[in-house]
Length: 309
Image 1 (tube, one colour):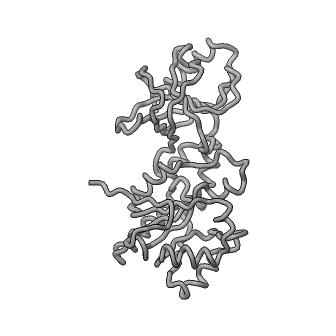
Image 2 (cartoon, helix red, strand yellow):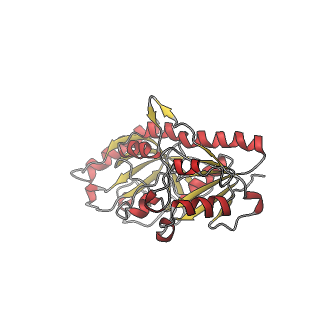
Image 3 (cartoon, rainbow, N blue to C red):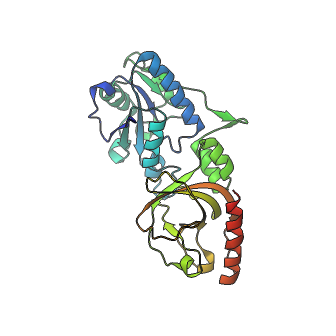
């Protein structure tokens, strides 16, 4: 039987989860750099015979402080929890990042949360970790108070590939440039968007290519265009092949960004079904066609390309 991760929205945590190894961060995307931390934490877990926990934040602090940033996340919370489970995390404390929390001073954060509530024994943080009101707390602050609050800071070296530090920021930039192959390499899996199928204007159906429409919510906007994709419907393990258009549909003069997915050899109604759309390859950028005939011709060419992926 698969062990389920314990999820907390507050600090009413079980006794067995106190005195644990704690990894602090947003962990957006859970890329190779993050995975290196979890591997190291799990080696320590076996040595010390204790639990591994994650202390993370929702929304991502940057999205809280800069309200104009709407599309930023590489993974949603559900995907993140699934990945934590995969990397053998025992529990997650998901901190609501709001005005009150943002005003806690850095000393209180260490004393009241890390020491009194979590009773953390080993704390993993990145070099650029900042916390507390006006971001006055940093790794140096944590190191200085190690003995006073009975914890040890572990600050692993960043994971690099070809002299580039693998970070969530780098992966967002790669997605925005349509470099899906490289983004997938650094994620060590296919980047995926998850969402419910909504009823649209049925323009795809009218021209012979029915699509499932999914809103992006707060996902980062990858380069608008056409992609070869794999699709999973609800919790069905079967992977279906398809093609997706991520963009503004200029031929139909639409203004809002939308993900439209055409699943090959499937015509049934999927409204309100949860789809996971995995991006395999960027085929071409979005363009405006002079008419439906030209658009249909291009879609057929795109499907041929996608089927070869």
